[in-house]
Every structure is written in C-alpha cells, then in structure tokens.
Image (cartoon, rainbow, N blue to C red; front, top):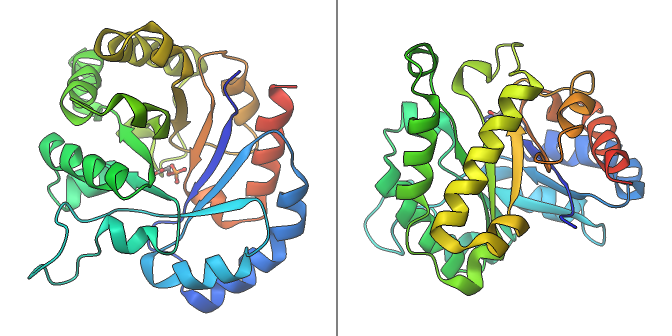
Length: 253
Ligand code: PGA
C-alpha cells in the first residue's frame, strides 16, 4: 500500500520566529496522526528553526526549491547537497517557480537529478494553466511535463519521487479541481509513468492533489484510490493542516 502524504507548502510565509511558534503549536497533535507522512516546506531561512522545532518528531522538513547547479558563482542559490545537510525533502517545479522564475521542464529535470543525487526525496509539481485547460490541452501539457521533467531517472531513486498534480488555476483561488478531474489526471500521470518506468514503479508512485485543498474538500479527493494525499498551500499555514493530515490518514484505514 502507498502511505499517503500531507505536505504543507508555506511559500513566502513565516520567518524563523513564526515558524518556531507555529510548529510548536501544532507539533504534538500532528505527531499523533498515524499512517500518513507529514511534510512541511518553510522558506529557506526558516528551515533551521523548523528542524529544531520538530526535532524528535515524525514530521519531515523540506525546502521549496534547489539550485540546478552544485556550487559556484550563483548568487542567491542553495544547492541540493547543502539542503540535504538539514532536511530530507524538496519541492521541485512548482508552478510559481515555472511562472515567476521561468523554470523550464529541462531545469526541473536537472534539479530533480541534483536532488536525488543529494539524497533528497522530491515532490515534483505538474499542472496545466487555465488557457491550456480551456484549449483542451491539459493532458498533453501534464504528460509533457512528466516526460521531460522525469526523464532518465535512476531506477533505484524512483521511490524518492512523488508527483503533485496542481492545476494552476486552482492554486490560491479557492477553486479546487473536481475529484473526478483530479482522479483522471492522476490516472493519466500514472500511465505515463508506467510507460517510462514500468507498471510496478507506477503502482508504487504517490500522486498528490494540490490547489485550494482544505479540510473541507480533502475527504472527497481521498475517496479516489488514485490520489495519495495533498500538497497544501494556504491551509497549511493554519492549525487546519492537522485536520487535513488526519482526514488523509483516516481515508486509508
Ligand atoms: P493553495 O496552494 O493550497 O494555497 O492553493 C497549493 C500549492 O501551491 O502548492
């Protein structure tokens, strides 16, 4: 069985002090939720505070991005090897990175390779924009992101890959995708992955839904056997994240 995941993408929210306060406030309740992998992704500067606040708990800390470079003259960047000194996960290819920082599938691909090499597990984000959806292009767009972004990965590292399907129009809008749409995209993603890496790797692949996921709508997504949890933005900044984690865990009991 695939162990489900509740992941919180904090984006540009919570400096070190707020990180420590928030995590101390949810730590004990979140730790009690069994049968789910809980992940939090604070901003880089807050990662040490998060690691410290969660020390000895079963809640994992990750970063929101890694550099495609390993070292050198790249002002403002942090390498996967550096991130791996403090934490075990990274998000890669979030749509906000693709939109505002011009990340291509090729950059996403090299970041994934760097991250896997450094021993980080990756939540790789894919998803179509509204115009692409309206042009009936969603499946082709997402399939292309998977094929290019996840090309030629070492077989022994496939277990370290999680895919988050996040339709761009659903992110931060309060307008989540429907369960059926998310399910059919997850099926499509799994079949593309199967073509690339075989049926058994595809069966083991965890696929999350992201985009205005809340405690109110997550149960519906989890009714689909194709969806293995959520990548949560706004609602992960609140105690609501504990509820979301609990609902995800209970859906697989
Ligand atoms: P949201 O963000 O839950 O605030 O829509 C999700 C994400 O961007 O990962």
